[in-house]
Length: 232
Length: 42
Image 1 (tube, each protein chain N blue to C red):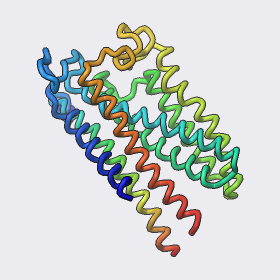
Image 2 (cartoon, rainbow over the protein chains, first blue to last red):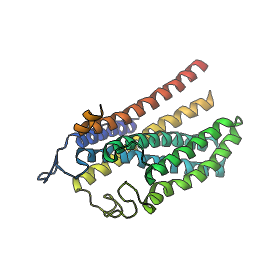
Image 3 (cartoon, rainbow over the protein chains, first blue to last red):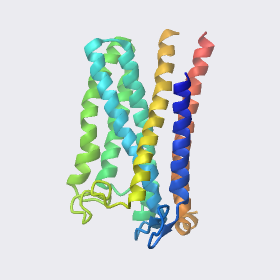
Image 4 (tube, chains in turn red, purple):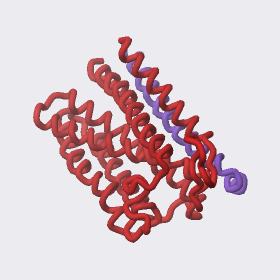
């Protein structure tokens, strides 16, 4: 009990620090101190969005892959526990996917001029939204619990396989507005090329970890609730 | 509104953080609705 409470308090403090730091650390032309972010021409203060927008997309991948892994487990063991875990992960994946899309669209409006540009990464996340919307449509269309769990597990595996392709591969194969697109002079993007300032990189990864842990917390609550729903 | 955000870029970051915040609050509402249903069943 104490350990769990300690973990929850730690996640809360961790993410609060990320939000405060991401918001208030100054952006200057020539950073002299550890707490100063370098000015990125064209992005300026909007560069801070990377600490909040990218983790949404990252957690989407984690959640959808987890949903796939539990779907495989369900097909192997046929216990409702794995179906519960799989659907809880997919639901949260959908939430984070919507948040990644909306936060990205807001950022796009101020950097690229319009909310939606059909950039490969925007297109791929839109396709993911459609794929997982169909997953929930499939689940709600079947009444028999075992049939629902089996069919949605098979669908979740097929959908899960497409996630790394749509998030990591396709946007790098095509020309686009996002960093890391094909033909980008920066290469595979500021994170993979380690071109981000070290202090920004630390906060970026801390944010990825923080939001992943928050996802884990939300996921645990959701699984517990679904177990109760099954019992009542 | 657009000009306000365009001229104060920190507000764009704030908008993005608030979007995420409202997303989580929405999820919390959904959980609570489910719990209420369970309580009514019992």
